[in-house]
Length: 206
Image (tube, rainbow, N blue to C red):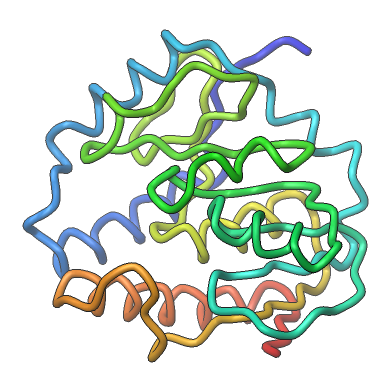
């Protein structure tokens, strides 16, 4: 499939970035443009391949999940979650993340949506993946808004046409990778964006 860069909702992207830059000024936003250019140089896969899936009622699994659910698409947030689902006998359709939590798990999914930003772009390898960025995309890359891996997965479901989403494992008080001020601020952003998305599609939390 031919690629063309897409910003799915420019106004939403601006809203999200203003929010996160006010709450997290210490992050490397000035390098986001370099991340976008690197994503273009890596090539990648058209996001249109995801439209072959039935996004009517996906299940999004976040790292602390414990409960399984039935849905039309299985979405894992980060490689850690994809590996956890594999151990429980669940096949992953899509994994979404920035490859900072057991990146080897990305190869377990049918499709991988890999996010590149100013703090990770030099670490991301070339792959048959869908690359997303948090600035204006170029080449074969996309801006699906959102900021943390979890809320970005929900924005992806929304833009793919989901009417309702089941979310297993969204527990902002449970921190698996680290527990510091930046992580707590990111979880606050994720909570706010999840509430914002509830006005656009049904979201059921397990």
